[in-house]
Length: 322
Ligand code: AHR
Image (tube, helix red, strand yellow):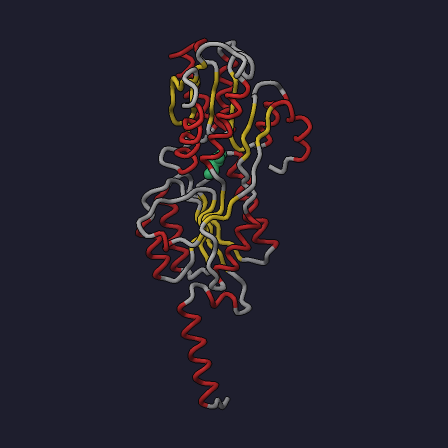
């Protein structure tokens, strides 16, 4: 095929431009390939999140390479390196913890592969190594949990002793849900966090740690604040095994609003769940397509969420999607 000089120059400029923009090749009609480094399957929430990303990828005609990090950061780092070697167009990362990502994110940037964070955020020196964060406002979730508690107990007298089950140590939702909750309860000296420990976002750990809290504090405990519903559900079992009534003797607050929490609320064993949506798949696919086309994404693509107290659980349950 013959090309005149002007066409040749235009073609070369277009090719040079394309190679400067991360993932632009993917926009040229070829099937988008995304590598997804998931944390693991620690909770009902996470299972719904994985399902949401997989089904949205299928609906969008995207090839998704999925890696289950099994709750280990080193597995996630290996997966990102494998995605870079496979020259995927976009990487989606659900970072287990906030720190320790600098090097591998730099490697992705050097390979011109945009990285979109989902469901948890990172703390890195160079914020240009990731394109966007798709997920919730975890500080606000913590505030919502505390506001519900203050409002629900406003007519009671005396100290309100709270035990807290934290999420995975060093993870963004654990740090921020703690921060937001403390920010609000600090406004009233009646509210005291008497014990706070990690339950790693799992039911089994939630139960184990709640057993220890009950042994140490016994009937002194008025409230359980769990950073996710799975830990709350595990803790409910521990409370019942001591002969106390969860939801009555001890108020139970969770985060996520998964179906399991609605079932516990309908049984009167849990009092409230603050919503954190795992259904991020469609927003992620849209963001990935834009990033692959070289578009600049908003730093934070937020999800809209509510609060579900026990009183509305039965009415809302049929509408729940996860
Ligand atoms: O990152 C979101 C959190 O991770 C969810 O609240 C928790 O259930 C999950 O494991």
